[in-house]
Length: 410
Image (cartoon, rainbow, N blue to C red):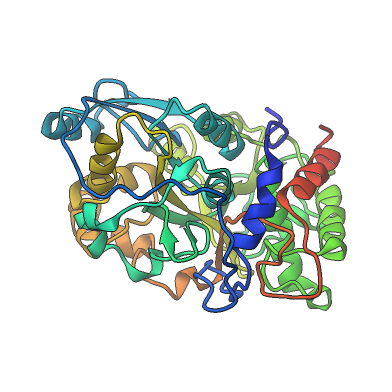
């Protein structure tokens, strides 16, 4: 798959820019504290005031591994957190697994789905496009228990209005096959340096947001470029990131676009080292056919904190609100985050997760904001610099997509 080429409606990014003005430069995307523009979505949908009975159906767009079991969820032997939701609410769930963020934005624009588990490179596009509605947290009782570090983030909060609840979070880790990589790496240099010993076996995420990974490496290794936020790149900084990605292209054996593509690549030996989600490592290591290792390198990492958002055209809004409350409830959030391999959203969910896997929350740094200090959650680059710079125009996701197309060959 050539990801990032199917994005439509880039015009909405002008609205995103106004919604994101005056960022603090917080690497984890904390909500701006000053200078927030008054303009946001042109006609935001009204926040739902009250919760009625479930409508009997719920149609979701989600990442693979997020909606498992039940009537129409993914079917994975031994895993099912959808059936308890269906039994308690009467809302029968159907899921469409999104290929990537661009695909998920497209699907939400159809109006056929009630909600989506959107990553930070999609959330602001959905908000600016009026495809999702702000939420009424009073209708989501479990939200009060969510870690403060996951609330009021700049990728899902505009002009003080929150547009969803967190699903979980994690870093984009460096993963390798220890049978081929005998010295454990501690730097992203092994996937970027021209003299990497793993030429031809390096892999990278095949999507334009990966430009931020190159920018992060440059931020730490070439401070003279002045990069302080990997999602806030002026034209010169973007050109430097492109040069690094072109250099990396000579090392790449194959890019991966879906988790399964990378799982297959490491399993069959086509891939030896590269960026990954911990989900892939969990699946590979559980298979018994291959063992992989992973780390967050010394430069830090990009990452993701996904948000469950309700469609502005939701046909089953009560069921969607019930889902948003359920998926952050202790047992359900523990089930999904343990299965996927990501940090739960609350202390109560951590307690449940550790009944399934000892030390789970410490392993995933769920309550450790220090760990996430140098994890730069996916965000939507815009012409208004997300690092708070004024008097300079930054590059938007359209420009990033063009760069990625040129680097990877379309």
